[in-house]
Every structure is written in structure tokens, then in C-alpha cells.
Length: 144
Image (cartoon, rainbow, N blue to C red; front, side):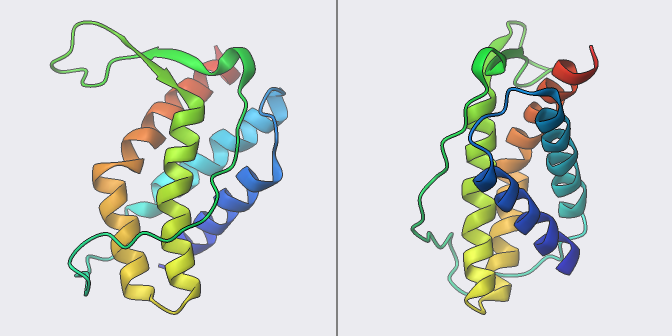
């Protein structure tokens, strides 16, 4: 759990520190950070939420700018979809940020169980999809 918390903090700090994501070094670093976050999520323990639902915390979302790399094509469900859809890196990165930051705030407030539940639930139903889409798009930008 501590490894995930460290990866989550590194992700949010990196996003907060960048205003533009248009140079190769920044994009490779982002690919590495998102990949680490995704990998560490598999180690999160199963916990029950004491709230029984998601707990939203208020914080501002960062503005991210991927310039010409923002929109990409993807298959939302490669087993059932036949037509590619447009994906957007800015939506992926802020979607991940929102879910991860929400858990970080809870964690920092001492609500560790709720933070872990938020991270794990979000991974399974929301930010995990954004992460896999972003990883594929970022990999394509950097290595193809």
C-alpha cells in the first residue's frame, strides 16, 4: 500500500509541476509514471469502504496541454467494438489525477482505509481504463 501511495504522490506531483507535455523527455517520464502507478495498483489490498460509496474531496484539477498529441484513436473494447473512437490524453491524465488525488487527500487526512478503497475501486472501474489508454498513446508517441 505504501508503494502505491508513493507512486500516487509522484504522479500528482509530476502533473502539478508540468504546464505543457510537448517535449519527448516529459512524455517519456509521464509514460513511466503512469505505468508504475498502474502496476502498483495490482498490489492494493481489498478493503471495504466504511462510507459504502465514493467520498469526493474538493481540489482543483490541473490544466494539461498535449498540443498535437492530445487526440488519438482507440478501440474502447477490442473484443466487441469495430469502429475506433477518439481518445484524449488530457481527459485520461486528468481522470487519473482526479481519482488518485481524491485518495491521496483521504490518505493524508488519516482515512487510509477509505483512500485504499477509492484507489482500488477507481482502478477497477475508471482510472485503470484511462491509464491503459494513456500508456498505449504515450508509447506510440515515444517509440513508433
